[in-house]
Length: 231
Image (cartoon, rainbow, N blue to C red; front, side, top):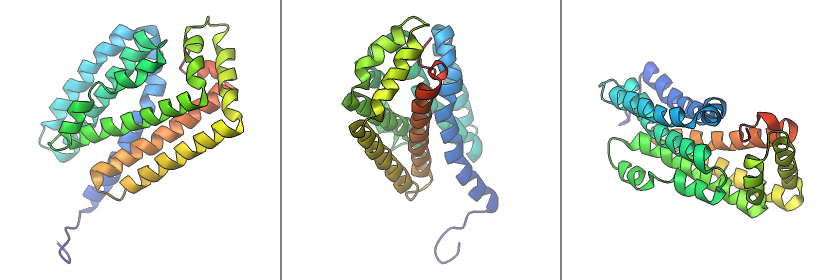
């Protein structure tokens, strides 16, 4: 301890920096793994939640800091994974249900912030906040109205519909709303980075959400068939 402040060892500092990166990777993972899996076989993708949860709990109880924190992230991630599977597997034509489904574990996560599961709860809550902002902007820009038609359209028509929905966001007012939302989330994410390791992780989740949304918009405009939203 120097000057009344505990100094982390080099490995501890390295791991503290690695946790937000690992959390950010978990935000990106559903784009490449969960989306195609749910399209092909929603039931098995949903059952995989049990694997994530079980591995997370085992690691959390290992007694080793790194394994425990990875376990916590997996537990938090399992909540987001389950919600994503339920919505995209069976309810994707009903966009108004998206946020309620994603928020199914909200009471548990809020309670968990004051327990040893704080990291898991913070990951889930940050993911949920990113989802809420995304859905709000979709509703305000009118894109949500096109959602059911896009996800339920025949395979030959869906890319064109998604591309058209993306073009609607290129008008001045939608662009202004998108920019305001991105600035808000990025600012909040950076602010979280100053509040300790748990909230630094949450900040990384929020910032990554902005990049994922931006990637999705770019894909919808340039190569809608690869967006993961359509069959």
